[in-house]
Image (tube, rainbow, N blue to C red; front, top):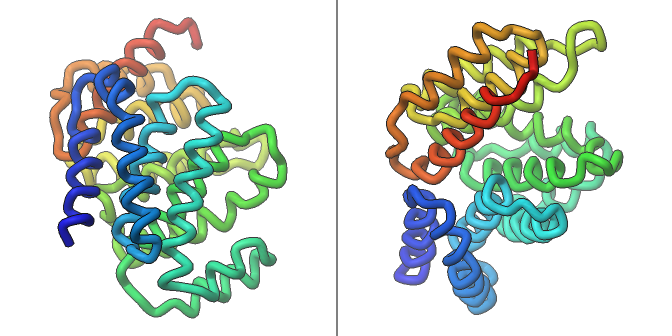
Length: 258
């Protein structure tokens, strides 16, 4: 219990930091410590999830070197998959199976606790995002969507709407002319904002970047980004993300996109 509490405290300390440079400088020590704790307790699900979460958070916005992002998202996925295999071995072994086999394995899971499935889905999503040039990786997106659908069907507000945010991004990839359904993406973005009570500023940044730009809605785009710039940065476990969201909002507004 003490080990798990330390891991959770480390993750929270980083996620609640408002200075990204401090996190970048201190992260290596945190990660090495967490790696050592997992090495000593490889069957500790809570530690594995904390490791997956922390590596994923760093790769998702703080690291700019593509090679390092790939390494970190891979470590995040490995830890999340280890946690999954401890709990749901059939789904774990069917990860690379056909979509139908994977879906059947997921359907057979009776638990309503989404913790492991969410860590697995989000780490996999981050892994794919770091490999957009790999068609084999992109082919796994429907499986990730299925995992997230399972989570929001049972718990629509899970992680203060972050599960909705992931689906919003995934479903805002193609314009209607190419068969996309961006309005579905818009729905998930709006749900993410509602469930976080507007405190998750990255939801508004991604709404602007993924949806508003896709459908060329400049008034929505600019309104969302100005709301981000005007909002407070502090929020439990969102402060680091919100700080990055403000930086990205300023950059997006400065671009001559429309």
